Image 1 (cartoon, helix red, strand yellow):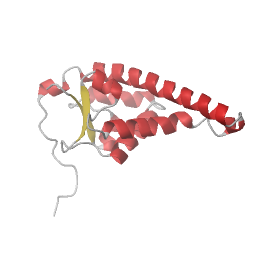
Image 2 (cartoon, helix red, strand yellow):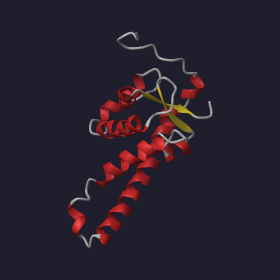
Image 3 (cartoon, one colour):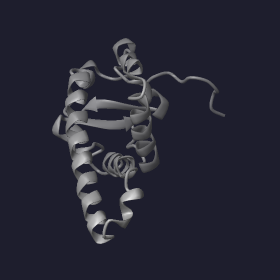
Image 4 (cartoon, one colour):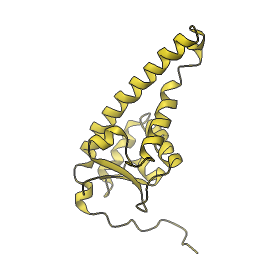
Length: 147
């Protein structure tokens, strides 16, 4: 039977964490631009197709697109969003396995909730493995791909 409580963190080579915070900031910026563009295009297309009748139900489109964007890309074979892949990053579970869809999508939800309380993003500065609070809650880690 597995022990109850916090488990020991796996060994992570220092080079796998080198520059991760800076790369993540750039990756998030790129991903936000992509998600916003996809949401806007989808909004316009659905607005035109419905002759404007869908305008009242379309505002939550951004979080829906972000949920599937993160879930599908991180759980895919590259284990990264396009922004993360561009910045040579990948996401894994703390066991080192690829992240399943639901865990990746929940990570995205936790990320956007964390943005409601920006000081929570500072947790990364004190974590030895450079994980943010939403990474810890989702039990994932972002690493350099080339390490």
